[in-house]
Length: 335
Image (cartoon, rainbow, N blue to C red):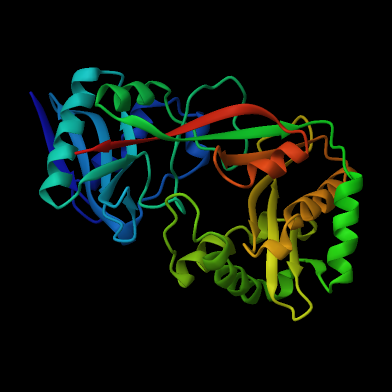
């Protein structure tokens, strides 16, 4: 007999939700390298599917008031985990559809733990080892979403560059032009890290506001999220560009791939540039500087992580000859 239990952090039965991944992944699985946290701010409810007193699947519903898709009120399905059983998955999805629709949702997106600031997307293959920041889930989750009537609404990829070529003539010319106009480039200041994060937070609202499915993040939450990275970043690879008035106009946030123990690999996590056309080419210039430093520090590859296929940052990846080697998808369904 299949039944579905509703829960949330703090409830007496929440351990059923929290502990379920331990039942479907090996104890040494890379899945546990990342803690798939609950986004409390937008959480509607967590759900646990139980069959004959055994947990078979879990998922959360999120109601982010800032999120819409095609002007439809949109809920998210996140924290999805399940055994490979279509009957179980179908029961769970039907319940999620009913709960979301009953509470005003017209569209569902998943997997997404509340917003794009949190874990979202599924890998479509496991052909290459995971890099740091990349979460791991069973591939059959894609089938569960597709069989439940979801369609792909966005595709993403990660590319890798092992040639590490830099100093293209056009990019060097643009670098000189920007510097002549008063633009300066500097590394993030770890001794003023919180102040630097405040500056990045303010800038992100301008740089990312047109991004697909972008929703704002509270300042305190942003600072908390990125404060945790301070101990593992190398300031040489967090590069900021400022205009002559010291206004931030672009930055790259990169981090070492600590999962790769065979060679030094650098992950380009975030690329942001002010949308004003006068700063065209700034991303290429910052990327070129990152490559120079990566070669100097004996890195053998650079990963451009989680590029949105229609995103502007893909042109930067192409400029540096990255080869696509990972693919991800995000699903959506009208209800």
